[in-house]
Amino acid sequence: MFNTEIITEKAHFAWLETLKDDATKLYFLAYLDDVPAAVVDFTSIDYQNKTCEWGFYLFENAQLIGALLEHLLLNYVFAVLKIDLLYCRVLAENVSVYRLHTKRFPFVQNSCYNFLCKDRLFNGLSLTKTLWQERRVAMEQMLRLVFDFSAVVWER
Image (cartoon, rainbow, N blue to C red; front, top):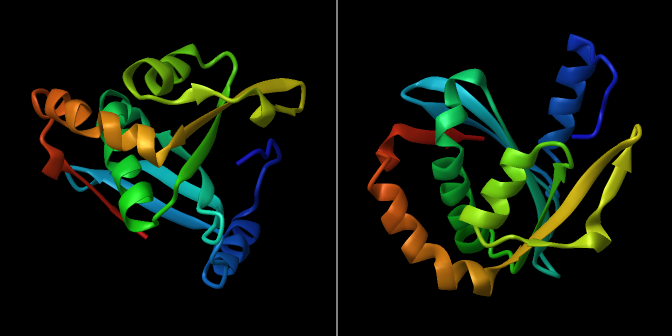
């Protein structure tokens, strides 16, 4: 979502309608203890080449569950969507999210995927299914020490 313009309610609902027939995009609303906590998107889904881009936007009440949500979503994209290569972009000044992706999770810098929007730099990152499968179990064991996995659900 690289838009800095104000979106009217009418335009927003029109855009939501387009998602019903667009197989290249999936959007979810994540809940924490029955309270909306994040918007999750998978875009540029290419089932033939097994690639897509993703992002998530945490609400104020969910700042502490970013790692848990990321883990659950990575499982989803690789196991359910059958994606082999996942991309994301992180605003360059958003150091905490960059660290989450590259220190706690095995995303790697992908400079080919950097993006400049309205004079703001987004760093490109990527993660392969193979690398995720190598690290997934250890990540889950660590997260289960801290989080109740059943506290987070999402719906399309």
